[in-house]
Length: 294
Image (cartoon, rainbow, N blue to C red; front, side, top):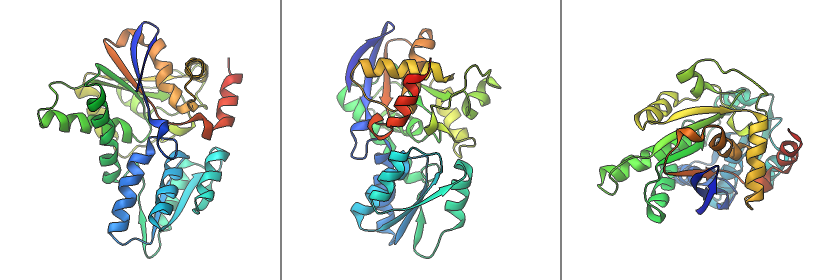
């Protein structure tokens, strides 16, 4: 974690992109692949817009088992290249929904589906983010996190709940989710339809229209006194520029949470933690596109 100040906010940045494959998805993939090996699976299957697929293919390769990853055809080219380079079979689909449908309907003998939106062991891996925050800092007042399937948000919530149950912490952080304007099912469940301004195509990692754990995500946000926000492409691009000027090379999806800091800074108090979820080095075309916005 690094300490910073932004828009008058006392800020902690949790650099999740220093994980082996460059994103927070390593935590869940490690747990899911370890379980797959214990169960005797010959191949793991995942559907992803990029980061989860890269992590699953890399950890499967490390474990000595095969992997098949379904991605939308417009997934970042660098991420698709990394999936194939790890030895995985890459299946390109028309969109994110088709990738999820085919991943579950085309399972063969010896295959184990480890879809991050569904696998409970994935969430257990994500709880370690909360444990690390506690070990290195304590409990921040607020955590602002990008939300798609909600694995990171739920891992943070469940991790701090476990710490509280063990008597290690006396309070929970307020948890805030951030989504892009073009795909915001969690925001719409709380606030109603999104009033779109410029769209949010830069947030390519947040395109899950029907997250399976939607009710759990809403409970985590509401029970901690948090909220959920939406941001547009110009706001994401400006957030990314600020991160780059701070020396943090994040991907545009990661910048959604940072973008919310300035737009909604009156919602936060005390120390605010933002996890930087993915490395921009894996998504150079996304960074280039973002820098042309606005």
